[in-house]
Length: 475
Ligand code: NCD
Ligand code: ZN
Image (cartoon, rainbow, N blue to C red; front, side):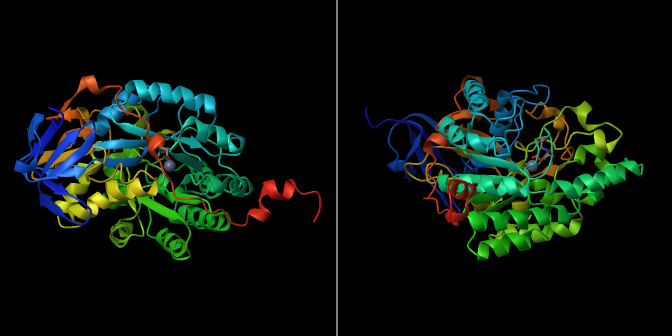
């Protein structure tokens, strides 16, 4: 029968950014074919009973580090995307601080080969925008990227941070392409100077990491990046916003019409300086987990739209790399792609936000910001059937030993959650079903760059760009 669909999901409650309602979903050829009453659904090859469960657009985690190629002891594209599948995450944007760094078309092509052969979920690949890769911008875009990543501060991978002069030129070059530049916004010279002074003074305990990186490290970077984005018309995204103080330059830039978006992560919303003693080096991450007074302003900023997105900065390292006694030798970051949805929905259950808010931050906004909406980020007829089916009345305790990531160490160890993804589908295909990885889905994830449609670019001050002034003979 030609109108037979592949799958009908019955009995669940569908959540969109503005409402929730009970309905069945029919899926055909990877797309949502129909949404409506059960009796209105076409005949299906397969059905799923989702009674009592919530049906969310799969999360789009715009900030993960899957370490492939280069650091298989930490993670690879299979283990990282399996972790995503268990976390209700159907698309990830993977960072370029692998080995080699993704800053040439050749390295990008190799990474596409790796990712497409191993991925359980869909993905976008970032490329580094640095002093040496400005010349590769057209080739990198041609090779298929979701956007650029610019490191204003050093972090894992030791990718050199460009000078402000190089950053301006890089923004000038990217602005007319319409691609978004995601920023690790920490000013290198401030934190390196403080870290070397702290090391010289003999401080080695975990919280010395926070002393090296007070919020001004991030505030100065966000403000400077916003000025360069405003001048050039480049689109920017501020990754991992960790402090209340960053919200002011972010909100002010938005008010001036700068195309700037922001993200925060569960660890900045839920952890604080009080957790350093318990977790030691395990909690070391860039930017650092900060004073508890930063948390409520970050929640408020999500609620009022100053911060747009929840991402995880999933940064897996091996246990041995996280437990060294001297904090300055501990690798920064910890896994998160698998625990973000349970942790955030646990806060929803506590009344801190609604399910609709969560769907806006985790799916709709990321899709809109990177030009994937409405193919991704929403459950509507014609969209990709990227779906997280979640039990929001499930009490469980996070146990790092049981997570899919190779990095079985995090500051979430022992934390209680009250929500759990039960099934995850990517373009209509189960990648995790009844908490079991669907091994045959390995290699079915696809790069989303091909469906990206950014709005037209609006470069500014084009008569002052490096290209403009150097092509002139006089004026
Ligand atoms: C990240 C990593 O390990 O790659 N570490 C971190 O502490 N966040 C790099 C980064 O996102 O800064
Ligand atoms: Zn970063």
